[in-house]
Amino acid sequence: MRGAVAYEIKNGDAYREAMTTLNRRSQPPAVLRRIMNAFEAYRAARKIGWSRPWNKYGIRTFQSYRLDCRNDGDMAGYARAVLAAPVFAFDAEVQTFIDELLSDQPAARDRLMGFLFFHEAEAESGLREGVILSFGRVNAKRRHRDRLDIVFEADVTGDTVSAPQRVTVYVDPYRGKGPPLYEATVPIADVAPAPEIFDALKACYRDWGRDDPRLWDHWTSQYIDYFAPRERVAAQTHFPETAFESAWRDTLARR
Picture 1 (tube, one colour):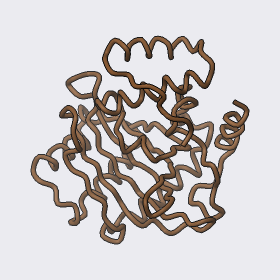
Picture 2 (cartoon, rainbow, N blue to C red):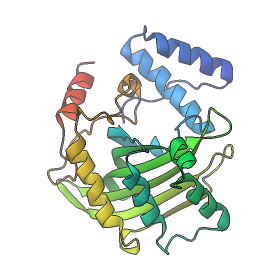
Picture 3 (cartoon, rainbow, N blue to C red):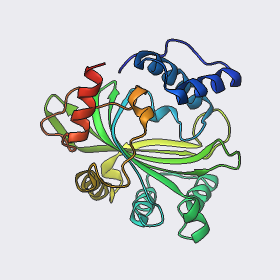
């Protein structure tokens, strides 16, 4: 991954000072990157905003789309279909949160936020590529988000990429620091609709493209380690390189 956190933000005053410095964008790129990664580490540890550790460490997100949850209702339907698989043993608290978050009721749909994050990840078994179907809402503590993520991943070996192999679910309504309320990784064969849903999300990657209004391309992504183009795109990738990713790589190489 690019760079490393050169220092740590330890308190709210330092966090606010870093935010001010970043918003000014007056420092050289290398300095902005160090500040930004310390800033993001602070946010992830405290689950501020959309930040969660599993979206940040050992991962490289090369394309992101922000969903329009009022009109992209099929995405919530995909999530409900995956989570209905018997392999996920949810207790009453987890199931209630899922049902409320993904409800079709207008009030719930108005609060729902969502993203697609196309990524590659480093695991002990090797490289993976996949997509995260990520949902959330503003928590009662306004700076935090309640989160639900479904991760679909395939294995990458050289230029060979497998069919999707696994599904990971994180259910994490904000409750302060600590692990998610529920977390599980299961073989994709145990989640009957998952291969078809993975193909539908691949189609979004293919069809939405650079000009789609859902594309999330915030300036901060240029300075965050876990937002980056792939260093090498496998020949059999599920997600062929776009002009956007290629140009991004060229921009970083010039810095």
